[in-house]
Amino acid sequence: MGAVHTGFLLLLGAALLIILSFDQWDMLNGNKEKWNVQHLRKQRIKEICDKEALSGKISFKNLKNLIVDDAHGLIYCYIPKVACTNWKRVFIILNKGEPYSDPMSIPDVSVHTDKRLNYLCDLPETEIKVKLKHYTKFLFVRDPFIRLISAFRDKFFKINEPFYKNYGRYILKRYGNHSKPPETFKQALESGIHLSFHNFILYLLDPETRKCNPFEPHWREMNRLCRPCLIEYDFIGHQETLQEDAEQLLSTLNLQSKIKFPVSYENMTISDQMVDWFKAVPLEDRKKLYKIYEKDFKLFGYRKPTEVLDD
Image (tube, rainbow, N blue to C red; front, side):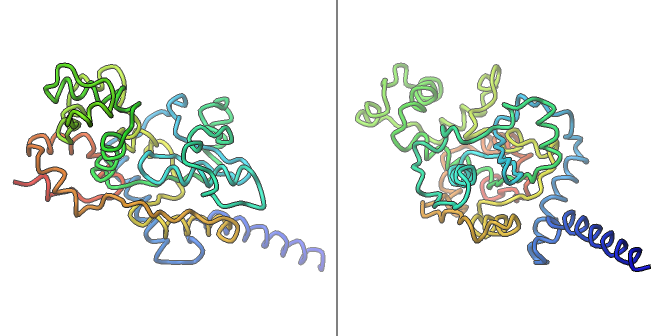
């Protein structure tokens, strides 16, 4: 009888561990309010994907933005202009193993090319399927128009010769009425030639822009980068609550005492500035732009920006 009783207790204990394992993400450490936020974010994606029939078959070669950490069973889909530099820093530090150092010890210039970052698309298809099924998957998103403004500021306001060479000169020539744009950003600056936000929007709206290739990742739609209708993410963070969501995620992974997500001190574009940015963009172009990013607004729970879309 004692052996039977002991066996029953062991079986019960194992069952409880399995239940706790499955409920880990749903309960988020017992914090009901945070659980509700995550539940609503995930439920919204599921409902919209089902309603608009956005699901389909995953093309593994297109999963270029998914980074893998085998030691902790993690997959992170990074989105440019949504704290991806700092999350890559975290993954590099996790890859180095304990004791973990400060993620900010890794300079910006080397983060995106660091060979310690492992990408899901580089693995065999069978391995990709297994890891997508069993690993903890997360991403961080941002208001689509604010992200777009942030990308424009970063790539065309600051001195960024590669982006000027690859995109800026073309945009100035085709949409800025400059038949012979300066060869470099510095020369353009000295000549008083500026690529306007409206020039950039016209470039995005032009069907020719995506005739052969998708958008550059800094302004590509978030749903196209991370495919939330095909991949069931366990955690969805928002840039607008970045520090809180990052701490919540690390806490759920039992990493909160071992590694700290970097605090962002950089001035971020805020929604109050959105109207100012769109003042020089005709209403019809604003509405067309919204159509391009409408899925992102809907899937990730961002309100329609009526302040820039209404007369």
